[in-house]
Length: 417
Image (cartoon, rainbow, N blue to C red):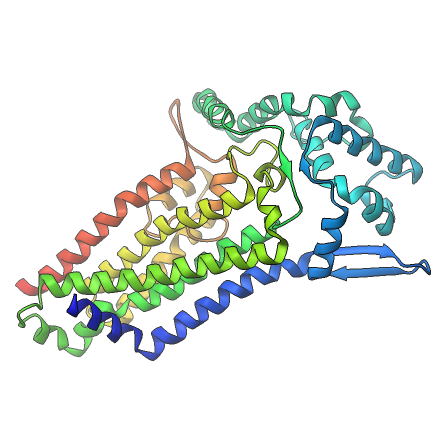
């Protein structure tokens, strides 16, 4: 324990570590606040002039105006009737033909529900959503009953290049969707944009923590101090375990603290009642996750932590095998960014498979775990289908002990050298 305390103190007292941890904490607050600036509201004042609100003021206006609670089919019909009435009044073909103040006053409170109604009744072959005038009150009344049909058509279109696995993908999706509770609940709060910034925060924190962990072993190898330490009483197995433990404690604490700060700050700004919103209103009407927004924030936070731990253990393994800091740093930062590059550059049939096998899989932007969870992404092979988010988490759980053993082996190799 004494050695662990000394190692923690040594790492934390370095200027680079201090600055990187401070930057991570600042990023957590910044990434929570940026989505707030995207919120807007427009209304007419007593003189008939347009008044524009943004940020926290706009959020408060939306909360006061938004239809909230359990969204029944009666509310869906009420929203559709309001849209069709205003569209007819202005002879509008789309929402851009309606004055902004009219939209905010008469339609904005129903916007999430009507948009999802259009998505639910999109053409089953092309995926093109119908116009407002094409929807009927019967469609609104059948909204929840129609969702499995919509889900089936979406998964069929997503897997059309894999006909052998198509049935398995549809069956897996429908089985997951059975856990989703209807009718959905809605309160204005944290938006889909804010979840994007949670994902970006985790990528940046991972990069910062990789920089902290990269020199843990390689710094001693570069300076020659390693040769002296390996000759001491506790310089082999015990010191290796201490260095691994201290690096994992520091980086894990940084990730966990930044994630909590982001969640608390985001919900404090947008309002905690918004956490009760069904995730289907934010992402897709047939989203497979049985969570509300608050639960989704924590599930993403904890899920990415497993991926984060796999990445940091790889960084430590790279540090244990590297002979200098430059090599360790290059391998570490490259391992964080490579999954994103592979996902973007390789053909669609290969990118998900290749990216999943890399140390930092699921941490990134378009390849992030969040999007694997709320999209309809399956690994398809033969006549089998596996939900990609589940596979990434299982693989990460395998990678963690594997990379720890690789790090220990790297240190043991130096003893025998």
